[in-house]
Amino acid sequence: MPGQRISRGRFLATGGAALAGVALLGGCGGGGEGGGEVLFSWGPDDTGVLPRLIERFNRENGSGARVRYREMPSDTGQYFDQLRTQFQAGGGDIDVIGGDVIWPAQFAANGWIADLSDRFGDPEEFLDGPMQAMTYEGKIYGVPWYTDAGLLYYRRDLLEGSGFSEPPKTWEELKEMALKAKRDSGVSAGFVFQGAEYEGGVCDGLEYIWTHGGEVLDPQDPTRVVIDSPEAAAGLATERSMIEDGVAPRAVTTYKEDEAHGAFLRGDAVFMRNWPYVYALVGNPEESRIEPGQVGISELPAARGQRSYSCLGGWNFFINAASDRQDAAWEFIRWMTRPEQLKVNALEGSRLPTRSGLYEDREVLRKVPVARLGKEAIIRNSRPRPVTPYYSDMSLRMAEQFSASLKGEIPPEEAVGALQRELEQLIERGEAATG
Image (cartoon, rainbow, N blue to C red; front, side, top):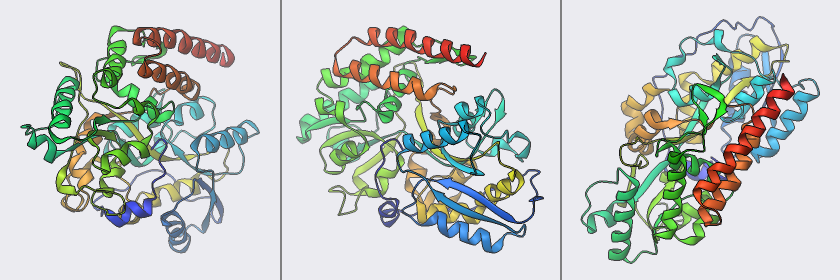
């Protein structure tokens, strides 16, 4: 999750999970390279799950390969920059890369990660959103391991006290409900979300655009920018109206995940947009003044006549295209996605699965409340940020313009117009450099 600093250990302590019934990945990797070391990179793991799983793999696998875990920076931007530097210098020594959901297109376009299309048994067993993010120019370059999606949290008790029996389906309904419940209950905020100028603010801005029928890039031609549209402008206008109409506090322009969930868990907000991790904190006396029975989860609202969408998060496995141990690397990835390892990852790491079948599993639905309550947003509505080799630069431009629009420094129409020009220039420069 962008800006996440919540300890996965604390997440686990308040809301563990158990996963079972996952099908194995198929594939042609056979560990034919024999023994030796496979170097695996990932950020810090405060749950201890990764080191323990790696230790088990090293004990149990029959190929003779041993995996060594190289801890990378917790800041995903710094991690990305280190990988890019190694790739540009010839590939580096990492074999398996644990990476962010927004990286595959840029890595694949530069030939830095291997095409894994032929190694899958059935990619359709995975959730559609994560697989879209792993796919570039019709080929699959990564294996999704766990996923995140934007959810709408709401105070069930406050809505019922104001005469509302269901969560809002449209943004206008959210505003109406938030203002009435805020007035009736005396809470200070109707709605909190991530409005700061960073990647999380981009996720929120994109959700407003998508749920109004807008796009950033043409779905049929990702080199064509289409953000300068009435629909995209309307999405940013709705986001800005949350402040203008008194639904959200002005301080939301500085909020990241922690500030938003802090306000909601203190009981200071009727609604909140955030990631699944927050649900495990509800009812934890160290984190929350509200109880699980007071909280509901729903898909995000949409403009009238449009459908809901949630921004996709999550992390995945990639294989370094320069590695001479790709079969052994694949064996490790396949082992890590077996049912027993996914179950450990859920129990001890509290990470949501990437296979749709698990959201129908009785044990999952019983022991992972956020999977049950938010499964529509996670399965049906999640979609990746623009899949393009230029995303890292595009994101910086979107963060700046979305923030300026939300603060009221520029009109939404001006923001999308500026982005149209800036993103076109980025793509033109990138295409010229690679052409």
